[in-house]
Length: 351
Image 1 (spheres, rainbow, N blue to C red):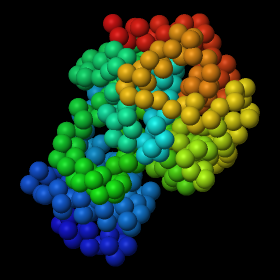
Image 2 (image 1 turned 60 degrees about the vertical axis):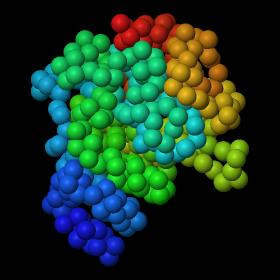
Image 3 (image 1 turned 90 degrees about the vertical axis):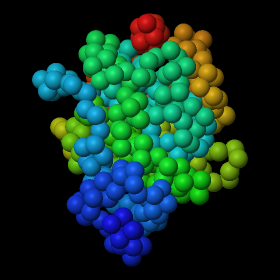
């Protein structure tokens, strides 16, 4: 069946929701070869995934995931936030989204951080949190307890998505061929905690609106999908980062229950930023990036790296409904770090 769908995709015919559900069943089947699965994923990527296909894949994979035992009443009474990038920009920056997620938790937002180890970078969110001493292997009851009592829990993707075990060899095969797959987009959509508010970074500006439409169709209440421009010293053409950029114009697609859907651009000149280049935001391995975050939270790093965390924290706080503007979010994020609350939150999560 998967080979039949592959031929359909080669003909540039999109998949129906039912075909996607059947395809996911086949991708999760250990008896189907990685080569056949990789051929399907390649054909889908080369055709170009539609928002409808991405949403259908997300729904089908969500149905195969483990669900945390969160009470409906508790969930409905608050916004649950995730701050996440799809990866793929290959610029080597430190873990800005992870730092922003911790700032938001310290500021009083309930944060369910979904992530994995590094795939296209030196340190993924799981790697850097582990290096910081935060547990990434929480069992479902422990994750719920941490979310409710500490306002932060990490949901390590492989532990919550058992179907991925049988999909991973095909993804690896595609990666070895230099072929991206739909899973580059799906990561932020598969958070088992079903966040109601999301700040999502993507590596190309044209992905902002389609991915925001997908989030809206999946029932997310408040979301901002962003892509920032940066000047890469290794390239004459501009590069893009899957975060809000302090180095160039940002493309934004956002929606909120009370305001509907909108697209816009945001200039970093609207904020009190220090002069910086991409080199100022470059990180290293998991230990190096963990130390960058510690230094920011201790107040020892007050330069461009802190600015990048402030800007993304500001947007995340706004998306979560904790502030009424990005400017207010910037101020709240700054106070959260300056008053030691971010450092205290990190220390709490390592106990």
